[in-house]
Image 1 (cartoon, rainbow, N blue to C red):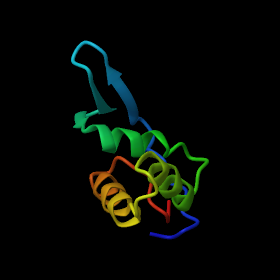
Image 2: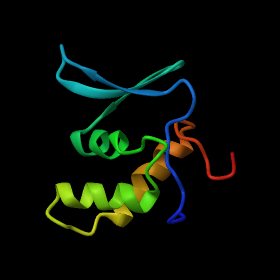
Image 3: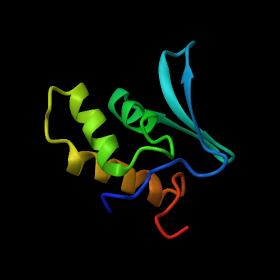
Length: 90
């Protein structure tokens, strides 16, 4: 994933906190994807403004400076492969 890539959710996809069930989900026209806490934190930083490197840095701060680059890249690639994030070439 490019350092200058700006990750953002695809059109019609949004991060939502289900307060009744105390969980985060990605809502999209075809359904919903239940997220674990870490995935929700990562996706919250994918605001269409921050670059991939900035997202990695923000997540790393949440985990005491841990090297999270590969984990973040893997998560975003999986979400993108499901059609829920914009691709670099779009």
